Length: 423
Image 1: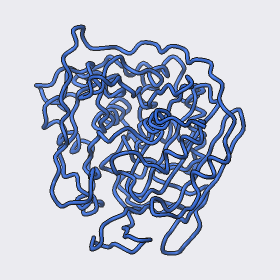
Image 2: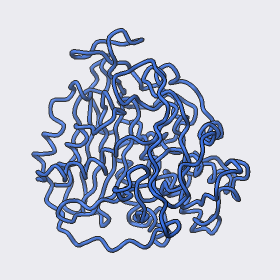
Image 3: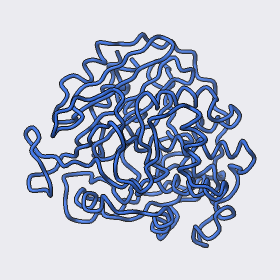
């Protein structure tokens, strides 16, 4: 069992989520809900590098570190006591060549007290970025697109003329410098506008009213804007919708029969877990829960996250996906390397912090040398994550119906699951 604080923080970054950086039109507040609009924070830029933009190079082979046996006691403890104040339900699937462990706890619906189910659908949030990235890399493999192509050439007029050239590969690994839209950052705003329908073009246009954040290729800033533009590229290159391309290229071939992209629909089809957000007393539509109050956020538009966060899936389907992806069955091995490669830059506004994101995922060397890759996602009421060693010795998929899924800081319930799964 990992006992160091460093181990917990490392796993938290990979499998629970880095500190929030990606403002969206429904981004959560970083403190107690307030009615005051909060502009997107702008980190202090790092000094310009002396050499030009960095280019990812082939990653070194992951060290041959022994994966520990599955710690069933720790996993059971990580989801004990549900439903609880912090979460209403959890689904966990741990797998790999050393065996598997499956569990589900809690309730799917507070109103009916229906039990949580292992096959329930949930909102996967930014796990979607893995799928969007994979489709772009498929197009690269088909020679219909190049990572060195510029957005300006492929999507003329989308970016302001004042912007420098932004390359496709820089969108995928978040080194483009494209900004986020400045929107209110309150829970009240998110709840009030939860049914608003955004178009991708509207989202990007709002974002690029702001100046470019840094010279493309010189820093990393994880923002949904990058994946929105990647989704628009998919549509321009193929002549078909992003939803159709992900469905026909990934969901169907992999056998993800319970996964889909909802488009403008606010509902979650079929058996699913309801998602709840904790709110203060007096909040619109609040109902008592434990010692506090929650609102049901299940029905909400995900057009505000689109190609960066709209996937609805199940734990079993996501496990199929990560196995197929890492095995080279989704993206050909030659084009798959960017998903396992971190650019040699620092995080924007944190000049002493090396980049942590690959194209579509995060790479992390854990204490003891174990290397894992994964992606997390958060929508109000839903925290999801996938992670695996590259050799698939250990895999993890979880869904936690957190009552404060988009709060700043680490989600302790999801962190406990992640630590237990990889230690």
